[in-house]
Length: 348
Image (cartoon, rainbow, N blue to C red; front, side, top):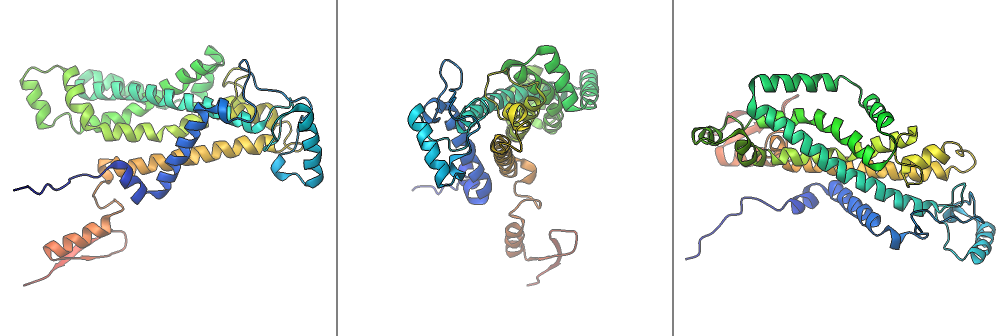
């Protein structure tokens, strides 16, 4: 006879699309942005040549083609007939570079920074947090006091000091954004590791002669993996926002590298009244990407964080209370300030 096997879990993506449609839509947006960054040379109307954006000297500060009237579009077509290019759907900058192409290549910069910084900062957080929790004692005391002192320094001030010492460039940005974020994020990883380090399987590992490194890699890290994923997903928006802020202040990517923040600081700020699209287009790209990253991070947290799965604070608390009432006979009753409390029991 075939045994009936009850499924104990559901695929993450199915739960994401069913329970968190906004987070799922944000994931689709981020994936499209990732694809645009990879295939920028094939998608951009004016692809880069020899590592530099193409310049259309006949179309400097041209108004976005989407917002032109009939006469302006006719004039733009005449210029395009001379230059032989595609319409500038989001306009051009002071050098005649296509803004849409610039945004697509700027997405490549943001994606490189996001992936690199998230991986590196998460590794730093996991190493510091788990070692501090597993070793304990004076090691934990010294490490946590160092983390406390580090978190007292404003993040932007720390980034400006590091970038002023290292100079502009993508590798420097990756280091400056990853290390401070990893040290600060180790506190959450340590808290999660402290909750599992005294479990029975860890004590059994100690009795069998397991080292601290073995216990950390074999028992602690796998059991706090949802917390690690939540921390990594939550750092996406911060990386994009910090990179844009540093580029706006002049401490971001090297000159000539497409960047959304650099476009705002270099041209959007100076030509706000003459060519507002130079500030609005990259600003909208930053806002949409940060919003999507935040929504996706929140969705991942709600689905994977053990503290929010199946408890009273979860989104399914009403269904859980009704099921408990049906099975046990306990009547749920709503009161101000509480989700549900059980006050009466059915007799018979």
